Image (cartoon, rainbow, N blue to C red; front, side, top):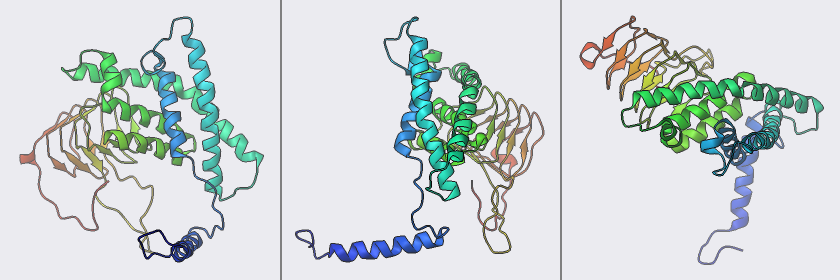
Length: 307
């Protein structure tokens, strides 16, 4: 049978798709039935639940009282961590390539989830500093509450800080998915492997890209369309990209990077420097530098460049 008004034979299309699907599975570790991935839909709820746990008065229920708030936080944390542990276990099974029941992956998922829970107070403290930095750095901000609930930079940073902990604890796939949830809604891409200090402020934010091995100090401010990326992508003897090499910039404390600046490679932006808008920078600069377009020079890139 085919849909009315078309000449497509559904059975033929299904058969061709099955052939392509099986061929793809053969090239990916030859899995006959690959384990399920963590659910993006569930992770959206987990991220929202964790944000409510961290800031219950502003991101939780609207009618919380002093008497009910701790109960709410505890209840939400219990539900969210249980859901998170299921997703972590899915990632562990996917990584190992096994759908078989194994208590070891259950125990490992529990260890990761418990360690993550213990890091939440530290995450909250860092986010407090980020919110305060945004309030102090933007004359349009009328209150820290406005910053928390309205600013896309804070949304992206919140997801990043949660994702970074999971990345460090051994759940990099879930971490990347949580970061990409924020990326989809804010236009800000922060790889969970990046290391970012406190009092971090992204103003406006759309188009900001921060690569996996970037290191950012404290009291750093970025504006929209800033890229902290890689200058080139080395390949191995087989022509495959080398993974995990240190390829992104180091930005020291108290640096401001204005809109559209592109900073590439494992270079260092010295403490207290200011990088002007639309600057293309591929060399380190000493502390206290002020870099404008007139001071930069063109370079020829081979093999591509980007994040």
